Length: 229
Image (cartoon, rainbow, N blue to C red):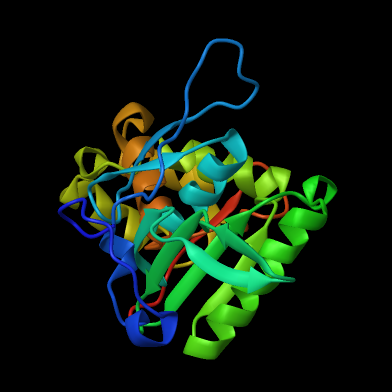
């Protein structure tokens, strides 16, 4: 659907350059008593808008796209891919379309390995083939690793610009110009109740870096300032 909610039909080869990262969802996110998945809305620090998800796994993937500096915009279920397979009309709406910083398209489907049945596998194959034809990247993911998910989920709590204070940020960047343990560096700047939210915001935005994939963030996690190029 376009930004007005009107449904459009066109060959993918003729519509590859449409800004699907701004498109409305082509179907609703159901919510009903007793359902086993947990739908909701994720507020994106990248776009300043809410994006829908249908499960916590999808939420985690949204969170990682929001955290990724190479992604500048994304939308949920922005189009139907329709194709003919064995005399049957098939269709599939990918979970997300993202636009990368270099202008390329990225299509993301979220499904853990142990939940891919034959129909899903055929849909992902068709989507991967279609993406290859128009120069998009296709990615099927089951979500981030537990350690990375836990760390980025924590940092996401500080993703809003209100957590940024320029004077504290400048001091943190100076302190961590040489790698240092998280808490020791924060205490050099001042009261940790004031400093830590800014530190976590800088980690979210990528101005400070740490190994987020190997272990959960803690007082002795080594933090360093990212070099400005």
